[in-house]
Image (cartoon, one colour):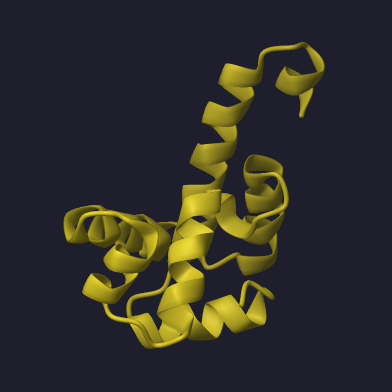
Length: 107
């Protein structure tokens, strides 16, 4: 927050991303959630708008090919987004990602 107050957004974002990973590794979910809000403009855990969109479709039970078709993406890009979602949210399965989406009102 101090770096942001000084106008150094790049350093602030870098430090917040380190904090996000650290809190995820420690299992400090409330702190991770707060840092995520600071990074993502309202989306939890630093999720991008596109990642949230992919997560919403995962929560509806769609497969990677179905998500790719719906969003006009390659399946490889969908897989990359899912990998980022899993890393940022600390989940390890599509089922856990679905639960996360519901817990964080992303559906």
